[in-house]
Each structure stands twice: as structure tokens, then as C-alpha cells.
Image 1 (cartoon, rainbow, N blue to C red):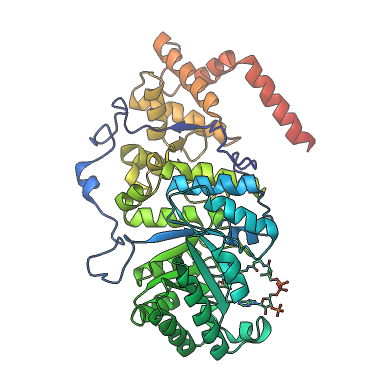
Image 2 (spheres, helix red, strand yellow):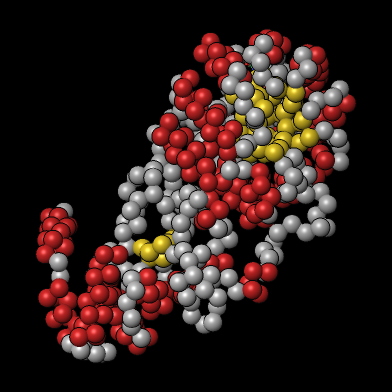
Length: 473
Ligand SMILES: CC(=O)SCCNC(=O)CCNC(=O)[C@H](O)C(C)(C)COP(=O)(O)OP(=O)(O)OC[C@H]1O[C@@H](n2cnc3c(N)ncnc32)[C@H](O)[C@@H]1OP(=O)(O)O
Ligand SMILES: O=C(O)CCC(=O)C(=O)O
Ligand SMILES: [Zn+2]
């Protein structure tokens, strides 16, 4: 088991890893690559999948986030946000820089209405939206809360028309026009969205969007409510819609089949302008496009644009805030903030990373206020990784000596993973043995004897304790 997946939402103690600082001039590298790890030619290499000038529809570098943790996120099975928590989340999202914050319908409950009013009064930079059914009763309550905009939704698929609200397309269109005109008359933004868009009839969809576009809706929304769409379907629908309406296009994508980030990216490529997210993706069932994952994906396409829009080092704090509020852990494989997101292990990776982090990283941890680690004390380690630790410790060993010490680390790690302390003390013992002349390359038995002599009593006791626990289990 990965020793770091102990359920803590904060990154754990990287006890068998070493942090790699590429800004430090002392971090000299092998093979003539610059000390800062940036080979001039490498610096110029671009992601071949980054947007091209020919992608004329693409909004990959021109989009807004509608952050729906306080609406869709509240629909997550574990979620209960009291007023204080809602305010803390809204403030954190605002400080991060999301353009919109979407709140639960004020028609849901008295407290939902009061919380909506309270968040509107915070004076945040982000625009505050609330989300309502396509119904005048809900619209009347919503416009009184002080929101900057109202997101109106109604199901258009045959499933929802038959089994949810029971209304036909004529009724839906008529009510949509009434609600949109009413909200517009209050001089606030209005968006109209079809729930379950990907299982709706295309002609119905395009026709209602064209109608609401003509009466001046600010945005139309496409929703993959059941998470059934794939990127090609998303691209085709959004590109078609882009040709039919002049207003902005929002997408709301559920993650039931794991497509939510890819679908969001593709929607932007096809001309969508606004993406719905929630922190950690929380929402109904497995939720929607996660804020962090979307940011990772868009940063990979255009780092400078994403860095200029959002306070990226805040991401971890926001995810921890929401994780704690809904009593879940940040997943270990979460993009950017997952426990091992910037930890490199295998020797081949470690060597290349130490030479130039771009070899195995598409995201720069420092842009997110995070640190890169190289894990050393395991059987997949290599002498280049060990050499970098030798240099960090200020020990002087030649390459043959480092290789000799590496062989010992591997031998020990074949039995159990070695902590960073274990590796450091092994290297120090080896170094002092070489310095004193007690040891030379290849003298395995002499090295074993020295290690035995220098083993710290508390270390061996700890080891025995953990061994005895394992045996007892
Ligand atoms: C896909 C999504 O996530 S959409 C957003 C989901 N968000 C929410 O549901 C917000 C929280 N919901 C609530 O608090 C409640 O469901 C309320 C206040 C909205 C409605 O509560 P109730 O009046 O008790 O109705 P209930 O929840 O049982 O059923 C939903 C009603 O809305 C109707 N309805 C459902 N969707 C829509 C819609 N998009 N537009 C208009 N009416 C709708 C249904 O026909 C049903 O009406 P009925 O009273 O004639 O049966
Ligand atoms: O309002 C929308 O666009 C989407 C509503 C929703 O949560 C969904 O359809 O999954
Ligand atoms: Zn949803």
C-alpha cells in the first residue's frame, strides 16, 4: 500500500522522498543540462496538443467558470452547508477568481433563501447566480434575493417530459419566454438551460434555444444530466448550437462515465463560453466537472492564461475546505492536489526529472504553491536519484561510490521501503566509511558491519515494533 494514503486530507509527511528545488543553483545536474534544470531547447518545446490558431471556434483561452459547489455541490449525498460554511466557500471561490458562483434555489427552503441573500450582500467580485425551475413562482422569489443572475432550467428529454414535469415542448417554450422576460425586466442576467440535453430531440433543442436567444437571454445551457455524452457528441452539439445562437453557451457535465473534464475541454474547443464546476466535482451521484481537474486541463493548454485568471495556489486550501465540510478525503489521484501528484518514483523518471522537470510533468507544482518530490528509498530507485540526495546532504562520493551505495539501498528496499531517514543514515555511514578508509567500493561485508554498528537504537526499536505488529496481524 502507498504509505501516504492514510486518509488525511492534507499532504502527509513525505518521509521517504526528497523535495527537488530547481531554482537552487546548487542543484547541479548530469549530462550537461543547466543547473536550473531548464535546457534552452526544452524550454521552447510546446505541448503539441495545445490550441492552434486554426481552432477558430475554440474558447480554450477565453472562458468563464460558473462554480456550482453551493448549488450542484449541495446535491452531493454527504453535503450539508450551514450559513457560515457557505460564506467561507463563497469567499474562497471569489478569492480564487471564479467568475460566477451559483447558489441553490431560494425556493428550496427558507434557509436557502436567507443564505442566498446573505451571500449576495458580501460584495464579492464574482457574480452571484441562483438556479431555479422554469416556473414563475421560483422566478419571483429569485429576483428578490439580490442575485446578479438567474439560471433557469427545465428538462427537454422525453424521459423528463414524461416522468418529471410532464410538460410538452409548447408549454416549455411558452413558460421559458415568460420567465426569461420577467427576469430580464429586473435588469439581471438570465440563462436558459435544457436538462438532459443529450437525450433530447435536436430539433426541439435548437428551436427552443433559437427562440430564447431572440428574446435576449444572456446564455443558453447544455446539460449532460446523466453523464452519458462523449467528447465527440459534445463537440458536435456545441458546434451546431454555436451556429444557431448568438448568446453565450454554458455547459454542465456530469461525470457518471468519467468524461466530465474531457467533455468540458471539448465543449470549449467547440465554442462554449462558460463551464460549470464544483470543488472536487461534488454533486448528484458522482458529480460534475471538478474545478481542480478542469483548471489542470486548461493550464496544460495555456498556462499563462490560466495563471493570469486564477489564484492557483489557493486551490489546495479550497479543496481541503470543501472536503472537510462534506467529510471526504481529497482523492490520492486528484489532479494537482492529490497526495502523489508531484511525486516521482521510478529511477528512469527520477533521473530525467532531476535534469528537467518537463520530462515527466505537464503541470509545474510551483505554480500551484506545491513542491515536487522524488522518492528514493525503494527497489525501483536508481543511482542518479541517490546522487542528487548525496549532493543535497553535502557528501562527497564519486559515481562508483554512489552506485555502490545505491545497490545497498535496493537490497534493503527489497525487504521494505526505506524512509528518507534510513537512506540518509545509510549514505552518511557509507560516506564516513569511505572517508576513514574503512570502506571501499564493492566491500559489501564491511559496509554491512558498519551499518550494523551505526544503526540508531531508537530506529531499530521502531523497526522491531512495526515488525512485531505486522507479524501479529
Ligand atoms: C438536474 C438538476 O439537478 S435540477 C436542480 C435540482 N434542484 C433542486 O431540486 C432544488 C431543491 N429542490 C427542492 O427543494 C424541491 O424539489 C422544490 C422546492 C424545488 C420543489 O418541491 P416540491 O414542490 O415539493 O416538488 P417535488 O420536489 O416533489 O417535485 C418537483 C416539482 O417540480 C416540477 N418540476 C421539475 N422540474 C421542473 C422544472 N425544471 N421546471 C418546472 N417545474 C419542474 C415537477 O413536475 C414537480 O411538480 P409537482 O409539484 O406538480 O409534482
Ligand atoms: O441548469 C443546468 O444547466 C443543469 C442542471 C443540472 O444540474 C443537470 O441537468 O444536471
Ligand atoms: Zn447537474
